Structures are given as C-alpha cells and as structure tokens.
Image: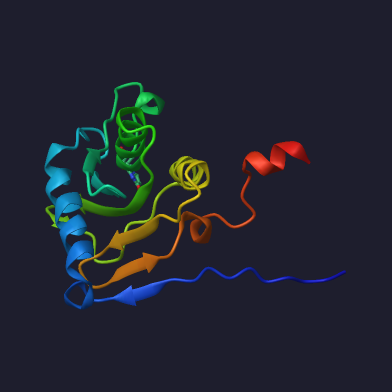
Amino acid sequence: MQKRTIETKLEIYSFEELDKSNQYLIEKAKEQVQKAYAPYSGFQVGAAIELVNGEIITGSNQENSAYPSGLCAERVAMFYANAQFPDIAVKSMAIAAFTNGEFLEVPVTPCGSCRQVLLETEIRFENNITIILYGTKEVYLLENVKQLLPLCFEKSSLIG
Ligand code: THU
C-alpha cells in the first residue's frame, strides 16, 4: 500500500493587492449578483469571464421551482461565452456570492458540476483559465481549473 497526497495551489490576496484587471473582473462579478434569479435559496452568485480578446461575459445563477432545472452562475456565463465565441479561449473567471444582505467573507467556490464544465473549456482551448474566487476578507487566485479538480475525468480519460 502506498499513500499519495495531491496538492492544490492557490494564492491568497486582499482585494487591494490584486492587479487592476483582476479587480475589474471581480467588480463585474459583484455587479452581476443583482441580476441573479434566486428566490428559493436567496444565494445570489455572479460570474464574470474575460476572453483572450478582452471581451467580458457575465452570468448569474438562475433558479427554478423544479430545483434541479436551475443553473449556477459559472455555467450560465461559461456556456454563453462558448456559445457566442466558440473560437475564443477564456483567460480568467471571477466569482462572487451575496446572501443575507452581504457578500461572503470567505471566497465562494464553484460546485463540482461547474468545475467539470470549466475544465472542459480549459482543455478545449488548451489555455489555462485563471480562477478568481472573491471573499470580502480575502481573494483566492488559482492558476487554472485543474487546481480545482484533482483526479479529473477529461477527454483523454475516454481513450484509456
Ligand atoms: N450557486 C452558484 O451559482 N454558484 C456556486 O458556485 C455555488 C452555488 C447557486 C446554485 C443555487 O442557485 C444557489 O447558488 C444555492 O446553491
């Protein structure tokens, strides 16, 4: 028997320490929470994507009375980006969450299904996506989606 430890690398910043382009993307994600449709959870999430051509795409969570039919902010934004710009790689994505009248102190982290969808885009364009997870106390920066999804299933897994 062997044991193996898998590491996730992330950098932790205060908002003020971030460079201007990352601050801007966070501001866009924060604005977007206002457009969430989250009457069931009251948990409003905003996502903002920067494409390599500079285009900014935003999205928010969209809930449904049939709960599983709703969709997270990250997938709303990423599917829109890929649908509208199928040939343009994604550079970075910022996520912010707002509930009970305030933004979360601790950075919001994407659910498993969103991680899988974000990974597909990263692999599809062979371009790392910087992930920026906003919290009022600190911000996490990850150099790519792979950091969020160790032991991932991806297209190369299909070949065996
Ligand atoms: N949600 C997101 O949109 N993104 C996340 O990263 C976590 C969860 C949404 C799904 C649902 O509408 C609500 O937040 C509560 O889970």
